[in-house]
Image (cartoon, rainbow, N blue to C red; front, top):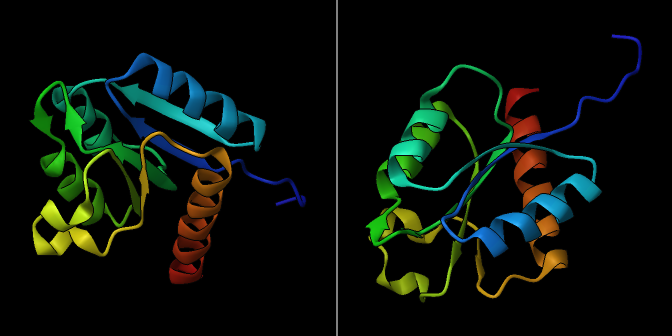
Length: 128
């Protein structure tokens, strides 16, 4: 490659319009591309399994009353790093998801961007 930087592609899974727009603005402002957003579990499963590069995913745990855990499983099976967004304490999650990075709602832009950068760095380190 000629030194061009490839923008990280971040899948956003959230059913709340205001959260999606906030995430879109902060991620695009940081030079990242948005994949999606997926607003439902069905959409999350579809986008999570679709061909194409996803460097990281930000996933709300509750999508219109449905747990997003099946979509998280699809992403993790693909090797996509996942950050959870939640208003719940992560201790209520099944044990296998508790170690995933998470941000409590309401979200703080600086924390989200730090977590996403760590996810991308970890993935890049794993694929180097």
